[in-house]
Length: 389
Image 1: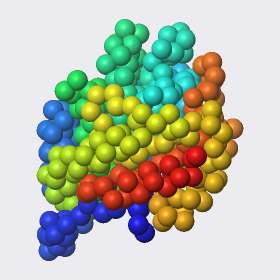
Image 2: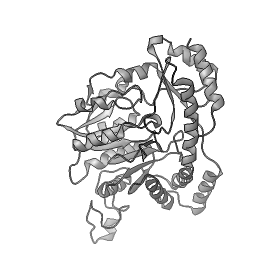
Image 3: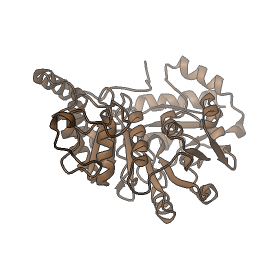
Image 4: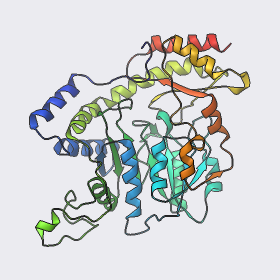
């Protein structure tokens, strides 16, 4: 395809990492995963990293961990504030653990949660807030963190789309009580499948490790704060203390991730160079609403909303893109309120989701990759300029 939605960032280093694991004959979670957890946590200046098999699983165990804390655990029926636009598995674990969603519209400039509506979303039952940085662009994380602290809320930071973005010199994925990342093929680093949870909280770290692997104690360090070890080593080998999962990462993913992490600053720099050209072409053209940077965008892709004032037909635009061999898709998951799954949720919309609906009905995105896309971006501009007369 002339301009793909996603492209590989692997090279010979990743292939050698795969060979290293094959030679070791150890494929399940082991020293490579443990090494990536430490290196990834160090990269972000966080105390603990727990690797899992996907960003979706990262969200699942992150939410679950807050239900098993000794002090101030989340409980079914509690409310959690969420943005109207994110990926489905941002929301599903919240529903699966019995939380009520307070759904807040997005800011049309950043495509992130509209922080001016947080006070309106707050009630006496609110116990948590989910901050999502959409497509590489930091949410107003300092405002959200301060809001959470002021009202004694947990902050769950879904950073699956925004690895290596920054806000005022601080990496996204470092603001939450728990923060999640995805290493899917199209994301900033790719480990086949994979995800990570970061936290500074010792107890949450232990809960995450148990929840990741069957809810058992085998993968917990000595002197764990979440259980007291007995003297029966035979029983302790298979002792279950939490209703956990098996969402462990594999050694291949850990080894690949270590090589990808070394490249991350260079991959991000290439994405930002492409973003600079994209903004030069589109940012001041009022036919198109494009994402405005909040902090330093790590530029997952290029979201575009057709300005409804011009009454362009999105279907006609898609036809032109297809003819030019340019890939496109819905922005993240679109507006969650427009999906059938909502019938299973307990939720409340805070005001109206006007901007989320606008994005859902008039938006799309094209890819950004960690390589020079000058030719592709210029062609994209030419096609859109021609079809949007």
